Image 1 (cartoon, rainbow, N blue to C red):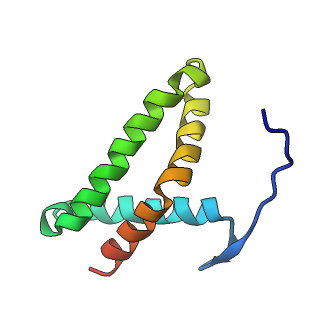
Image 2 (image 1 turned 30 degrees about the horizontal axis):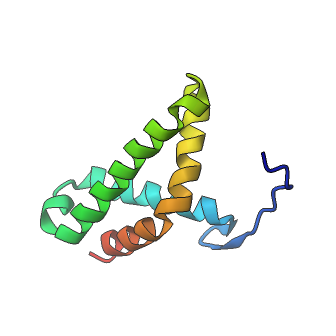
Length: 103
């Protein structure tokens, strides 16, 4: 286990200062809202479809890989999944965010 103290590094955000993870989570939330508001986006743009599918496949993979660590605790599992997605999917989320936002 790594017992190094956690250091929060803030980055400029639209509503003040956010950590890099908070920026990632806010962008993911905006992506989900845009697609929920108009799911036809997925049929209109192949790149958006592919990036969104890859993000969801990564989520399924992270849930499977972290299930044992969480020991049946759903809240812990979700936090572990979010941490993995932040580490592995930040570029995908940034790309998807720009494509969905810029349509």
